[in-house]
Image (cartoon, rainbow, N blue to C red):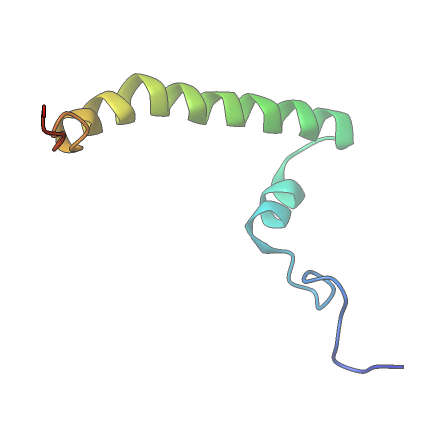
Length: 69
């Protein structure tokens, strides 16, 4: 037996952020999975509609340094 050593990172009682979210969602596993999917889609929507358009002018993608030789 090995004491204090776990083969999985969540074996010591800390399961991280996603475990915390999963435990605090209501319902059974199917309802939690559906709510999780809706939350992920909402985050992706907000990123594509608001965050990425806001950040695009700040990113240097149009500043190319290729010379025509």
